[in-house]
Length: 201
Length: 201
DNA sequence: TCAATAAGTGCAACGACTCAACTTTTGAAC
DNA sequence: GTTCAAAAGTTGAGTCGTTGCACTTATTGA
Image 1 (cartoon, each protein chain N blue to C red):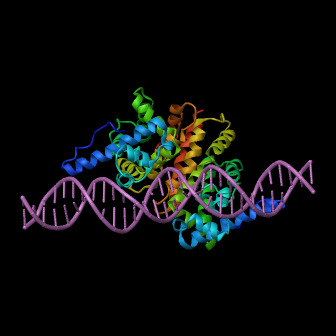
Image 2 (spheres, rainbow over the protein chains, first blue to last red):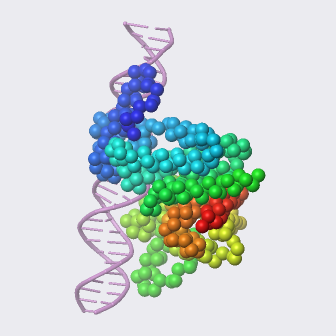
Image 3 (cartoon, protein in one colour):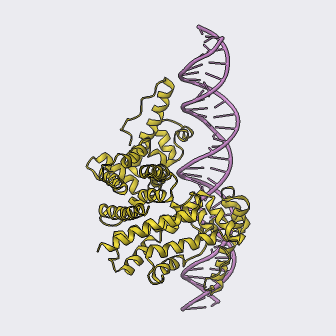
């Protein structure tokens, strides 16, 4: 999302200009994508709209998909916080389930900006895949947080498995009628499994 | 794999020639990939080696990655059979675990043909991702088989979740030292979870 | 034998992405 | 204040996967 400015404001003129260029590119891209669809907008066109060359564009974003996923460096932080700062008595999978359901509800919320954005991603295979791949990159960090929180060795395979499955749960639930229920059931499976595994120690 | 000929032998001259062309392309591709690596071999080069045009190549294989994954139409059949024909008293997740472990052992076996082939896939991100995507396409069928075998409605979300997670388990275990153990632990989680979920009915 | 069909060809093109060489802007040291 | 190196940006040509189109050739069934 382009609007949320959580970054700590660049300092020098140089970095400010650089950030501005980057923002101009991302804005132009998102606007065009929303207007005409991801696949029907070419790189050159985006570069033109932002008034830069295609080479400059690729110096700011490694691949076309990345144009859509600007910023959000603290997504991982929030994910880990969901585990670490969960209410007393709540299991880890339950905390992750809540986190996932919050996400879902934000995407289905009533701010048309958000819904249009998430629709774009969900209806474009290339973007879905890219988003999922980005999401999965947090699995190592999540596994470590889980292990730490459970007093297990930081490379415990069960923690890694739980982390991976939890991050895959939303995808597992895709296309199954009532998605909210499907997500819940997927996490139920993990919750029951995790408590049984944790008990055996 | 190029060698395993399980197909029912084409009939007409036309179809035989077509199959031969296809085979020539796949063989050339695999040979070059093994010699120099997937990313360092271009489509045009493969087409030349097989003595066909690139257009012809793409009439046989939809994308470059597909050149490596010829045939194996009954992979899904074997997967479903692992569930349906499992020994008495064995749980569904346990059966899937055995199936997965068999795969792993075949890949790590001592036939250098096989190991080289699997190494190629495992060391090439594009091929890993493609293989995983193909593998995941069986999740709907697997979910249905699980539901049927458990006497649940064929669109039960818990079955879909179990199917998806089971197919993701090998990937979840990747890069965790003793892979065999990691796979086992991932399936343990599913096994415990599944038995608890199934009991609550 | 003839027409319909399918396989294969050649070539040009597109879109994403890279590379090398070059200009401009900026930050800072002298 | 001048000078200089690094960083940002440009330009243009090129690679690579992939597609479209118009065309030839071979196979098949009637």
